[in-house]
Length: 277
Image 1: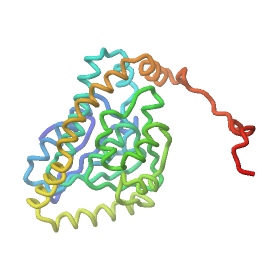
Image 2 (image 1 turned 180 degrees about the horizontal axis):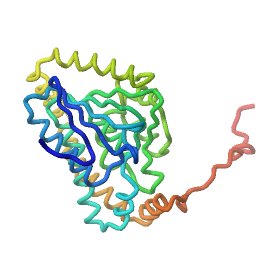
Image 3 (image 1 turned 135 degrees about the vertical axis):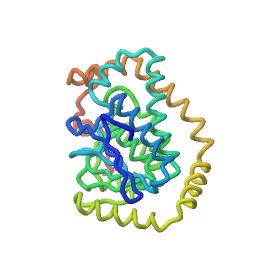
């Protein structure tokens, strides 16, 4: 049995549950979690006992994205080191995305940055209503490059434009409205009832047919994804090594506002006479 430090994997009744298990820091990523998640999904892909994979988080959050120590290390990376780091993260998302078995996201709480990337590579996702989500990278002077192909495929260019640029927070209802998730629940009890219902539907489906369906779906966007993956890896390495990228990550680690942050004056349009008389 494979041993893990940052995640838990349980297989029962033809279903595997992969749990992000760093609740004390909201299941934030570090390099070890990325490696362990990648390994787990590769093993589950070839496990004949498993027909469905559920991805969830332990505690109050699903995943807060990259953790502080991981970001503290990355802000000192060279361009080449950033590129290698992005490549490993991209391999994780692509591994989950191409898994031939249905992957269900049980989104038990808030998700930020790369945490939303994980939601985006799930085939079906359910979320609790009070969860908070944000593509917070822009507030750190970087961008959600690696996850962008998967996110845009889920929520479309229009929604991605807004939420990538603003970094604003939104809730589970908005996540449902924009197509990031498929079901919303008032609480975890209701979430698990909906999850059980979906798993039962999947257990009524032919495993071979589901595998072929995923192949067809992936083929429909395969050439586009292949071309964009390398570009996104290089783009995040470029931005992370830029002046603003370094400033944003430094400010985050030092728990201060980055130097570009300004306050918006609510009376900006007061004297512009914009309204028709």
